[in-house]
Image 1: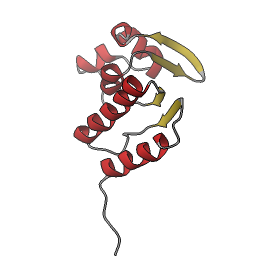
Image 2 (image 1 turned 120 degrees about the horizontal axis):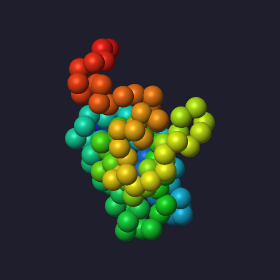
Image 3 (image 1 turned 90 degrees about the vertical axis):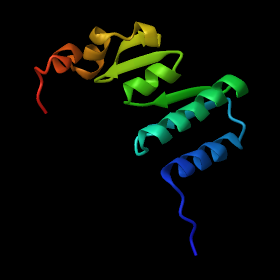
Length: 115
């Protein structure tokens, strides 16, 4: 009989498998895309702890801006294959987000954009 694992458990197992190889660099492509917000924060916390405590350079492709700003030391935004932002989370402002996503956060907050 198979064991049912949650998405967060599967992600943690994938991270453990990758770390068992003792990498110097860990690449994670959308590691929390399918997780609920609580599990996403937990998994990002695990990745941040690995980077900090084990000294593993961790590169994460992620579209959740709140998680990127909370857990990253450095953010790089790419639009159409071109780097349009390279800086710290504190430097990521509405203008940078607009360059990255072609999205106007101020208009969205003012209710001027519709889905």
